[in-house]
Image (cartoon, one colour):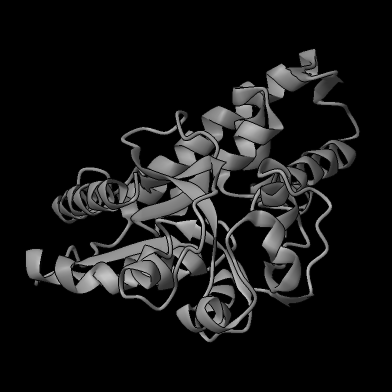
Length: 309
């Protein structure tokens, strides 16, 4: 291998640097690339270490390119565009009747998959592949047509479809509400087992019992017990089976409320600061199948919002 190629920085590092330099924000760049802010920050630092020069000036609540960084950013941006254009030019034709949708495990299992038979009735020739993974994906790589993500703001993307926000409220099985200790006010949760979504990386810090209890006048409440789960759909399943009280995400798990598997024992609720957005990949935004799927999502989301105002 030529020695110049051996010194070539990782393409992921270059793409992270390009986005951060364009947005002048590690947070916004990370959301654009569907990686965590800390991961992108580490990539940029590794690139600076490899090059031996600082590329950014890190100020309090501000980010700026150094003079060298700005020059390098112009070159990197140009070359990445050329690589993308070359890939498009030689790419093999794809099966236009296959649609790949990337989303989280919870959204896929609790909201999207139960509704897919209705999409098949609308577009029977379209094969939908749901890629459910809580790891974020890069839409520019070409293997995903639509991403459905839970974001604070998606205004940086083109053709973004807002779906709905999220309300958090305690939910439990009807049998637990009828036979267990009373559940008439937040303080009554002290006599129940609380079911938690385990979030060790702090990706969704507002979806936890401490935040909900503080917002509903019961900060510091000590429950009778606790159970923790690594996936949110496991939390919902445990609640439906009567193992305790879960923090329900509406309308994500609204199907369980509508069919009676879960009930909301009291009306106190807490609005999460983020929402769900459908984001078409740049290479797929104009495909007829993608447009039909987005229109179907829009109607399904409007129905969900209407049921849970």
